[in-house]
Amino acid sequence: MNSYEYSYTAFAAEITLNYGDYSFFHRFMNDEGLAKVLQQASKDKESPLKLYYDGEDSLYKLSSKLDLWLKEHRELYSNYSGTSGPFEAELDIDWN
Image (tube, rainbow, N blue to C red):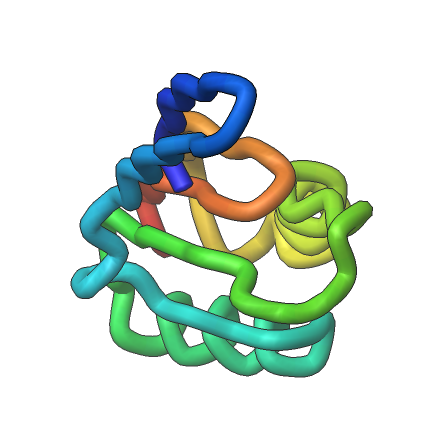
């Protein structure tokens, strides 16, 4: 969800939810799924790389998981940039 709006009275409420378009994102449900996506992206030299966590852990920290994976696999790329949050990331990666 990107944003929401709401209004209410004593007897009724209206909530509007706005969702982002994640159709071009790699969706995964857990750490193992993320590892598989990242390994395949490194083989395919995919860039930009778009990731979306679609699991049940409301405290998931995709940015932390990505930082760790990138540190552990430094030999696979020369540079990267982008944005990352708890549930989604968009990275430009210069794969080796």
